[in-house]
Length: 100
Image (cartoon, rainbow, N blue to C red; front, side):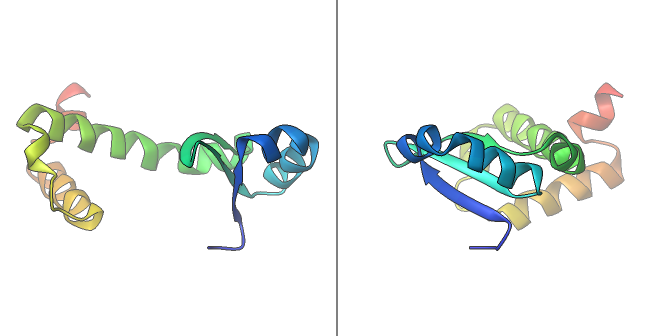
């Protein structure tokens, strides 16, 4: 796991919340799991702003795949899905481009 990423369970997050917030303020991305599944992400506002465009792009790709059916992403890697989104961007067929 990368140095700036941390994964904790919900109980530890509650018990050590001030410490976790301080780590996030220093640039760490903290994933909080509940019942071994991702439940929350704690990140500084600055770090979120750095990731915001990527998050919006990913949401657009997921919306596109939802339109063509969930089977459209089964067995595809994230790199393949992102490459398809870039191809659609270049062709002007990307859902995000259509809404702009």
